[in-house]
Length: 419
Image (cartoon, rainbow, N blue to C red; front, side):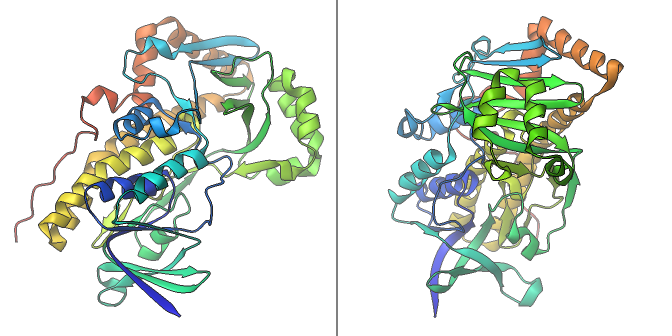
Protein backbone atom coordinates (compact mmCIF):
# COMPACT_ATOMS: atom_id res chain seq x y z
CA UNK A 1 0.00 0.00 0.00
CA UNK A 2 1.36 3.45 -0.97
CA UNK A 3 0.57 6.55 1.09
CA UNK A 4 1.15 10.08 -0.22
CA UNK A 5 2.02 13.40 1.40
CA UNK A 6 2.41 16.78 -0.27
CA UNK A 7 4.53 19.60 1.14
CA UNK A 8 6.45 22.57 -0.11
CA UNK A 9 9.70 21.06 1.19
CA UNK A 10 10.73 17.47 1.94
CA UNK A 11 13.81 17.12 4.16
CA UNK A 12 15.54 13.74 4.14
CA UNK A 13 17.39 13.32 7.41
CA UNK A 14 16.27 14.25 10.92
CA UNK A 15 19.65 15.19 12.36
CA UNK A 16 20.73 18.67 13.50
CA UNK A 17 20.87 19.99 9.92
CA UNK A 18 17.52 18.66 8.75
CA UNK A 19 15.50 19.40 11.89
CA UNK A 20 16.91 22.92 12.33
CA UNK A 21 16.05 23.69 8.72
CA UNK A 22 12.56 22.21 9.10
CA UNK A 23 11.85 24.24 12.23
CA UNK A 24 13.03 27.46 10.58
CA UNK A 25 10.90 26.75 7.51
CA UNK A 26 7.83 25.92 9.60
CA UNK A 27 8.25 29.25 11.44
CA UNK A 28 7.94 30.90 8.03
CA UNK A 29 4.66 29.06 7.36
CA UNK A 30 6.34 26.69 4.89
CA UNK A 31 4.89 23.19 4.93
CA UNK A 32 7.69 20.68 5.48
CA UNK A 33 7.94 16.90 5.85
CA UNK A 34 11.03 15.41 7.52
CA UNK A 35 11.88 11.79 6.76
CA UNK A 36 14.18 10.18 9.32
CA UNK A 37 15.47 6.65 8.89
CA UNK A 38 15.81 5.93 12.62
CA UNK A 39 12.79 5.34 14.80
CA UNK A 40 14.36 7.20 17.73
CA UNK A 41 16.89 9.90 18.61
CA UNK A 42 19.16 7.73 20.80
CA UNK A 43 22.50 8.23 19.05
CA UNK A 44 25.96 7.68 20.50
CA UNK A 45 29.22 9.27 19.33
CA UNK A 46 27.24 11.51 17.00
CA UNK A 47 27.95 15.23 16.92
CA UNK A 48 27.76 16.07 20.63
CA UNK A 49 30.25 18.96 20.44
CA UNK A 50 28.50 22.24 19.66
CA UNK A 51 30.69 25.22 18.76
CA UNK A 52 30.12 28.69 20.29
CA UNK A 53 28.61 30.05 17.06
CA UNK A 54 25.97 27.32 17.08
CA UNK A 55 25.29 27.87 20.78
CA UNK A 56 24.68 31.52 19.91
CA UNK A 57 22.39 30.54 17.06
CA UNK A 58 20.44 28.09 19.22
CA UNK A 59 19.93 30.93 21.71
CA UNK A 60 18.82 33.33 18.96
CA UNK A 61 16.43 30.69 17.64
CA UNK A 62 14.80 30.26 21.06
CA UNK A 63 16.09 26.73 21.65
CA UNK A 64 18.78 27.15 24.27
CA UNK A 65 16.31 27.57 27.14
CA UNK A 66 14.63 24.32 26.10
CA UNK A 67 18.01 22.59 26.50
CA UNK A 68 18.85 23.97 29.95
CA UNK A 69 20.30 21.23 32.14
CA UNK A 70 21.11 18.90 29.25
CA UNK A 71 24.55 20.22 28.32
CA UNK A 72 27.91 21.18 29.82
CA UNK A 73 29.95 24.26 28.94
CA UNK A 74 33.62 23.83 28.07
CA UNK A 75 35.75 26.59 29.58
CA UNK A 76 39.23 25.44 28.55
CA UNK A 77 41.14 23.42 25.97
CA UNK A 78 44.62 22.02 26.51
CA UNK A 79 47.06 20.16 24.32
CA UNK A 80 49.64 18.00 26.07
CA UNK A 81 52.47 16.69 23.88
CA UNK A 82 54.94 14.15 25.27
CA UNK A 83 53.87 14.99 28.82
CA UNK A 84 54.18 18.79 28.54
CA UNK A 85 51.35 21.29 28.09
CA UNK A 86 52.08 23.10 24.82
CA UNK A 87 48.79 24.98 24.34
CA UNK A 88 46.21 26.16 26.86
CA UNK A 89 43.07 28.01 25.81
CA UNK A 90 40.70 29.88 28.13
CA UNK A 91 37.46 30.49 26.26
CA UNK A 92 36.51 33.31 28.65
CA UNK A 93 39.20 35.38 26.88
CA UNK A 94 36.99 35.52 23.79
CA UNK A 95 34.68 38.54 23.97
CA UNK A 96 31.59 37.18 22.26
CA UNK A 97 28.00 36.77 23.51
CA UNK A 98 28.56 32.99 23.70
CA UNK A 99 32.28 32.23 24.03
CA UNK A 100 31.98 28.65 25.27
CA UNK A 101 31.53 25.47 23.24
CA UNK A 102 29.16 22.99 24.85
CA UNK A 103 28.83 19.24 25.00
CA UNK A 104 25.22 18.45 24.21
CA UNK A 105 24.02 14.86 23.76
CA UNK A 106 22.33 14.65 20.39
CA UNK A 107 19.11 13.03 21.69
CA UNK A 108 18.42 16.16 23.77
CA UNK A 109 19.09 18.51 20.84
CA UNK A 110 17.00 16.53 18.37
CA UNK A 111 14.10 16.12 20.80
CA UNK A 112 14.08 19.88 21.45
CA UNK A 113 14.09 20.61 17.72
CA UNK A 114 11.30 18.13 17.06
CA UNK A 115 9.19 19.63 19.85
CA UNK A 116 9.80 23.12 18.44
CA UNK A 117 8.72 21.93 15.01
CA UNK A 118 5.52 20.33 16.25
CA UNK A 119 4.41 23.72 17.56
CA UNK A 120 3.79 24.70 13.92
CA UNK A 121 0.93 23.16 11.88
CA UNK A 122 3.00 22.83 8.71
CA UNK A 123 5.65 20.57 10.32
CA UNK A 124 5.53 16.78 9.90
CA UNK A 125 8.18 14.36 11.16
CA UNK A 126 8.03 10.77 9.91
CA UNK A 127 10.49 8.46 11.64
CA UNK A 128 11.40 4.92 10.53
CA UNK A 129 11.15 6.27 6.97
CA UNK A 130 14.05 5.44 4.64
CA UNK A 131 14.38 7.29 1.34
CA UNK A 132 14.71 4.76 -1.48
CA UNK A 133 14.19 6.87 -4.60
CA UNK A 134 13.77 10.36 -6.00
CA UNK A 135 10.68 11.42 -7.91
CA UNK A 136 11.48 13.22 -11.16
CA UNK A 137 9.34 15.19 -13.53
CA UNK A 138 10.78 13.85 -16.79
CA UNK A 139 12.52 10.55 -16.29
CA UNK A 140 16.01 10.41 -14.76
CA UNK A 141 17.13 13.80 -16.08
CA UNK A 142 14.21 16.00 -15.04
CA UNK A 143 13.77 18.17 -11.94
CA UNK A 144 13.36 16.37 -8.62
CA UNK A 145 9.75 16.53 -7.42
CA UNK A 146 9.92 14.52 -4.20
CA UNK A 147 10.95 11.26 -2.56
CA UNK A 148 9.85 7.67 -2.29
CA UNK A 149 10.41 6.20 1.17
CA UNK A 150 10.07 2.79 2.81
CA UNK A 151 8.24 2.69 6.14
CA UNK A 152 6.96 -0.12 8.42
CA UNK A 153 3.48 0.60 7.00
CA UNK A 154 4.52 0.38 3.36
CA UNK A 155 5.74 2.83 0.75
CA UNK A 156 5.38 6.56 1.35
CA UNK A 157 5.55 9.11 -1.46
CA UNK A 158 6.27 12.73 -0.57
CA UNK A 159 5.76 15.28 -3.33
CA UNK A 160 7.52 18.61 -2.81
CA UNK A 161 8.73 21.67 -4.67
CA UNK A 162 12.12 21.23 -3.03
CA UNK A 163 13.81 18.13 -1.62
CA UNK A 164 16.68 18.68 0.83
CA UNK A 165 19.35 16.04 1.38
CA UNK A 166 20.33 16.33 5.04
CA UNK A 167 21.12 12.63 5.39
CA UNK A 168 24.73 12.85 6.46
CA UNK A 169 28.20 11.87 5.38
CA UNK A 170 27.03 8.69 3.61
CA UNK A 171 24.12 10.50 1.93
CA UNK A 172 21.89 8.15 -0.09
CA UNK A 173 20.07 11.09 -1.64
CA UNK A 174 23.36 12.49 -2.94
CA UNK A 175 24.06 9.10 -4.53
CA UNK A 176 20.59 8.87 -6.06
CA UNK A 177 20.82 12.41 -7.44
CA UNK A 178 23.93 11.72 -9.50
CA UNK A 179 25.61 14.93 -8.27
CA UNK A 180 29.38 14.49 -8.54
CA UNK A 181 31.54 14.48 -5.43
CA UNK A 182 35.05 13.59 -4.35
CA UNK A 183 35.67 11.61 -1.18
CA UNK A 184 39.10 12.39 0.29
CA UNK A 185 40.28 9.79 2.85
CA UNK A 186 42.60 10.99 5.58
CA UNK A 187 45.55 9.02 6.94
CA UNK A 188 43.76 7.91 10.09
CA UNK A 189 40.57 6.53 11.55
CA UNK A 190 39.32 7.01 15.12
CA UNK A 191 38.33 4.45 17.73
CA UNK A 192 35.70 5.94 20.04
CA UNK A 193 34.91 4.69 23.53
CA UNK A 194 33.12 6.08 26.56
CA UNK A 195 34.45 5.90 30.13
CA UNK A 196 33.36 7.19 33.56
CA UNK A 197 34.74 10.66 34.12
CA UNK A 198 37.92 10.60 36.27
CA UNK A 199 37.59 12.43 39.59
CA UNK A 200 40.94 14.22 39.20
CA UNK A 201 39.97 15.94 35.93
CA UNK A 202 38.18 19.25 35.52
CA UNK A 203 34.92 18.45 33.71
CA UNK A 204 34.96 21.71 31.71
CA UNK A 205 38.17 21.12 29.75
CA UNK A 206 38.80 19.60 26.34
CA UNK A 207 41.99 17.53 26.44
CA UNK A 208 44.17 16.53 23.51
CA UNK A 209 47.05 14.20 24.28
CA UNK A 210 49.84 13.52 21.79
CA UNK A 211 52.82 11.20 21.98
CA UNK A 212 54.84 10.69 18.82
CA UNK A 213 52.41 9.91 16.00
CA UNK A 214 49.62 8.86 18.39
CA UNK A 215 46.98 11.20 19.69
CA UNK A 216 43.72 11.08 21.56
CA UNK A 217 40.76 13.38 22.17
CA UNK A 218 39.23 13.39 25.66
CA UNK A 219 35.85 15.10 25.69
CA UNK A 220 33.73 15.57 28.84
CA UNK A 221 30.26 14.26 28.13
CA UNK A 222 27.14 15.30 30.00
CA UNK A 223 26.41 14.27 32.68
CA UNK A 224 29.31 12.15 33.99
CA UNK A 225 31.41 10.43 31.33
CA UNK A 226 34.26 11.14 28.95
CA UNK A 227 34.32 10.34 25.23
CA UNK A 228 37.72 9.14 24.10
CA UNK A 229 38.82 9.21 20.47
CA UNK A 230 42.07 7.36 19.70
CA UNK A 231 43.66 7.66 16.29
CA UNK A 232 44.71 4.56 14.34
CA UNK A 233 46.17 4.30 10.82
CA UNK A 234 43.61 4.40 8.00
CA UNK A 235 42.14 0.92 7.68
CA UNK A 236 44.11 -0.22 10.73
CA UNK A 237 41.25 -1.63 12.79
CA UNK A 238 41.77 -5.17 11.51
CA UNK A 239 45.45 -5.14 12.49
CA UNK A 240 44.67 -3.62 15.89
CA UNK A 241 42.01 -6.22 16.62
CA UNK A 242 44.42 -8.97 15.61
CA UNK A 243 46.78 -7.75 18.35
CA UNK A 244 44.02 -8.15 20.93
CA UNK A 245 42.16 -5.74 23.17
CA UNK A 246 45.32 -5.27 25.23
CA UNK A 247 46.85 -3.28 22.36
CA UNK A 248 44.01 -0.75 22.64
CA UNK A 249 44.46 -0.54 26.41
CA UNK A 250 48.20 0.05 26.00
CA UNK A 251 47.62 2.78 23.44
CA UNK A 252 45.47 4.61 25.99
CA UNK A 253 48.08 3.95 28.70
CA UNK A 254 50.63 5.92 26.71
CA UNK A 255 48.32 8.91 26.23
CA UNK A 256 46.35 9.02 29.49
CA UNK A 257 47.78 6.68 32.14
CA UNK A 258 45.25 8.02 34.67
CA UNK A 259 42.57 6.12 32.71
CA UNK A 260 44.42 2.80 32.62
CA UNK A 261 42.45 1.01 35.33
CA UNK A 262 39.12 2.38 34.14
CA UNK A 263 39.55 1.34 30.52
CA UNK A 264 40.34 -2.24 31.56
CA UNK A 265 37.18 -2.39 33.66
CA UNK A 266 34.90 -0.75 31.11
CA UNK A 267 36.22 -1.93 27.73
CA UNK A 268 36.14 -5.72 27.83
CA UNK A 269 35.22 -6.36 24.21
CA UNK A 270 35.53 -4.59 20.86
CA UNK A 271 31.75 -4.10 20.97
CA UNK A 272 32.42 -1.52 23.72
CA UNK A 273 34.07 0.68 21.07
CA UNK A 274 32.98 2.37 17.85
CA UNK A 275 35.11 3.07 14.78
CA UNK A 276 34.78 6.25 12.72
CA UNK A 277 36.10 6.26 9.16
CA UNK A 278 37.74 9.70 8.74
CA UNK A 279 37.31 11.44 5.40
CA UNK A 280 36.17 14.70 3.90
CA UNK A 281 33.83 15.11 0.96
CA UNK A 282 34.02 17.89 -1.62
CA UNK A 283 30.89 18.43 -3.72
CA UNK A 284 31.35 20.92 -6.59
CA UNK A 285 27.59 21.51 -7.01
CA UNK A 286 25.29 21.32 -4.00
CA UNK A 287 22.04 21.53 -5.94
CA UNK A 288 20.05 20.72 -9.05
CA UNK A 289 16.49 21.73 -9.95
CA UNK A 290 14.23 20.56 -7.12
CA UNK A 291 17.07 19.32 -4.87
CA UNK A 292 19.73 20.80 -2.57
CA UNK A 293 22.35 19.18 -0.33
CA UNK A 294 23.27 20.55 3.11
CA UNK A 295 25.31 19.60 6.16
CA UNK A 296 27.55 16.57 5.85
CA UNK A 297 25.81 15.56 2.62
CA UNK A 298 27.26 18.70 0.99
CA UNK A 299 30.56 18.99 2.86
CA UNK A 300 31.72 16.21 5.16
CA UNK A 301 34.28 17.45 7.71
CA UNK A 302 36.46 15.67 10.29
CA UNK A 303 35.86 15.48 14.08
CA UNK A 304 38.54 18.11 14.82
CA UNK A 305 37.12 21.18 16.64
CA UNK A 306 33.54 19.88 16.42
CA UNK A 307 32.71 21.53 13.09
CA UNK A 308 30.11 19.07 11.78
CA UNK A 309 27.16 20.19 13.90
CA UNK A 310 28.33 23.79 13.71
CA UNK A 311 28.19 23.95 9.93
CA UNK A 312 24.97 21.94 9.86
CA UNK A 313 23.16 24.53 11.99
CA UNK A 314 24.67 27.48 10.12
CA UNK A 315 23.61 25.84 6.82
CA UNK A 316 20.05 25.58 8.13
CA UNK A 317 19.70 29.20 9.23
CA UNK A 318 21.24 30.35 5.94
CA UNK A 319 19.09 28.18 3.69
CA UNK A 320 15.71 28.63 5.41
CA UNK A 321 15.10 32.33 4.60
CA UNK A 322 16.33 31.84 1.03
CA UNK A 323 13.90 28.98 0.47
CA UNK A 324 11.07 30.83 2.20
CA UNK A 325 11.50 33.84 -0.10
CA UNK A 326 11.77 31.65 -3.19
CA UNK A 327 8.58 29.74 -2.35
CA UNK A 328 6.75 33.03 -1.84
CA UNK A 329 7.90 33.96 -5.35
CA UNK A 330 6.25 30.71 -6.54
CA UNK A 331 8.65 29.97 -9.37
CA UNK A 332 11.00 27.07 -10.01
CA UNK A 333 13.66 29.50 -11.20
CA UNK A 334 13.55 31.34 -7.86
CA UNK A 335 14.17 28.06 -6.01
CA UNK A 336 17.12 27.26 -8.26
CA UNK A 337 18.63 30.68 -7.56
CA UNK A 338 18.02 30.30 -3.82
CA UNK A 339 19.94 27.02 -3.74
CA UNK A 340 22.80 28.47 -5.76
CA UNK A 341 22.92 31.50 -3.44
CA UNK A 342 23.04 29.15 -0.46
CA UNK A 343 26.15 27.43 -1.80
CA UNK A 344 27.82 30.72 -2.70
CA UNK A 345 27.18 32.03 0.81
CA UNK A 346 28.49 28.98 2.63
CA UNK A 347 31.26 27.30 0.66
CA UNK A 348 34.08 29.71 1.58
CA UNK A 349 33.43 29.27 5.32
CA UNK A 350 33.35 25.50 4.83
CA UNK A 351 36.59 25.67 2.85
CA UNK A 352 38.31 27.60 5.66
CA UNK A 353 37.16 25.11 8.28
CA UNK A 354 38.29 22.17 6.18
CA UNK A 355 41.72 23.76 5.64
CA UNK A 356 42.10 24.42 9.38
CA UNK A 357 41.13 20.84 10.19
CA UNK A 358 43.55 19.39 7.65
CA UNK A 359 46.40 21.48 9.07
CA UNK A 360 45.60 20.12 12.53
CA UNK A 361 45.46 16.57 11.18
CA UNK A 362 48.92 16.98 9.66
CA UNK A 363 50.28 18.39 12.92
CA UNK A 364 48.86 15.51 14.94
CA UNK A 365 50.42 12.98 12.57
CA UNK A 366 53.99 14.35 12.78
CA UNK A 367 56.29 11.70 14.16
CA UNK A 368 59.96 11.31 14.94
CA UNK A 369 62.23 13.63 16.91
CA UNK A 370 62.21 16.52 14.42
CA UNK A 371 58.51 16.21 13.63
CA UNK A 372 57.54 16.23 17.29
CA UNK A 373 59.85 19.16 18.00
CA UNK A 374 58.35 21.20 15.15
CA UNK A 375 54.80 20.51 16.36
CA UNK A 376 55.54 21.40 19.97
CA UNK A 377 57.33 24.57 18.91
CA UNK A 378 54.40 25.71 16.78
CA UNK A 379 51.87 25.10 19.54
CA UNK A 380 54.04 26.99 22.03
CA UNK A 381 54.25 29.98 19.70
CA UNK A 382 50.45 30.06 19.50
CA UNK A 383 50.21 29.57 23.27
CA UNK A 384 52.46 32.56 24.00
CA UNK A 385 50.75 34.89 21.55
CA UNK A 386 47.17 35.59 22.67
CA UNK A 387 46.34 37.61 19.57
CA UNK A 388 47.47 34.76 17.32
CA UNK A 389 45.63 32.21 19.45
CA UNK A 390 42.40 34.17 19.20
CA UNK A 391 42.83 34.67 15.45
CA UNK A 392 43.33 30.93 14.85
CA UNK A 393 40.42 29.79 17.01
CA UNK A 394 38.08 32.53 15.79
CA UNK A 395 38.20 30.91 12.37
CA UNK A 396 36.75 27.75 13.82
CA UNK A 397 34.47 28.97 16.57
CA UNK A 398 33.40 32.58 15.96
CA UNK A 399 32.74 33.11 12.25
CA UNK A 400 29.06 33.94 12.74
CA UNK A 401 29.19 35.94 15.98
CA UNK A 402 31.70 38.29 14.34
CA UNK A 403 29.30 38.99 11.47
CA UNK A 404 26.82 41.08 13.45
CA UNK A 405 23.51 40.91 15.29
CA UNK A 406 21.47 39.09 12.65
CA UNK A 407 20.49 35.46 13.20
CA UNK A 408 21.66 34.13 9.86
CA UNK A 409 25.15 34.60 8.44
CA UNK A 410 25.57 37.21 5.73
CA UNK A 411 24.05 35.92 2.48
CA UNK A 412 25.77 36.60 -0.81
CA UNK A 413 22.94 37.09 -3.29
CA UNK A 414 23.08 35.58 -6.74
CA UNK A 415 21.96 37.95 -9.48
CA UNK A 416 18.75 36.95 -11.21
CA UNK A 417 19.35 35.17 -14.47
CA UNK A 418 18.25 36.84 -17.62
CA UNK A 419 15.73 34.88 -19.66
